[in-house]
Image (cartoon, rainbow, N blue to C red; front, side, top):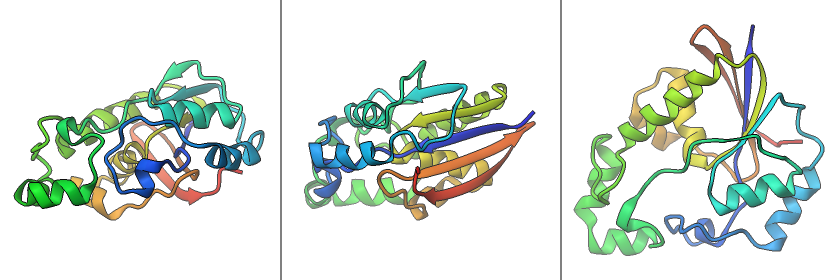
Amino acid sequence: MTTRVTLISPVVTAALREARFDDDVPPDGKALAAARAVAGHLPAAGRVLVSPSARCRATAGALGLVPDGEAPDGWALGRWRGRTLAEVSAEEPDAVAAWLSDPDAAPHDAESLRDLCARVGGWLDGLAATPGRVVAVVEPEIVRACAVRALGAPEQAFWRIDVPPLTATEFSGRSGRWNLTAGRPPA
């Protein structure tokens, strides 16, 4: 039987607007109003999962989703959390260059891109045992890592995938084979 996994990226936050590594600040009312506008238009799901971040939980609530489980947490970026990319680039240009070019680099003292992709890819593959539809509100990097897994792409492809706020990306598959439908509005 086919499993359909619809990943919803959360609404925009101040961190995203400021190109800041997420510091788990909840979204503002305007962003949540955008999610409420599409509430009730998502496909019915046998399971609803939500990443533990404040913006994923708030987005799920605004969409009217009641989670029955947890989706993977976002990318662990250690000491860079809460800082802007410009700040980190100015202070640690070699570290940022390594992070962007080497999937095994973890200059922020946390999770490498390869580790992120393996963790999230394993989660996606585990969902194949759940026939029917799963809807999950997850951070954009989770969507990107799932796309890398579904396409069998190298980790470096992660940097070439854009995931706009409040969009749906669907993975459908069975027996370890995933198809991808990307970037549509959730309604």
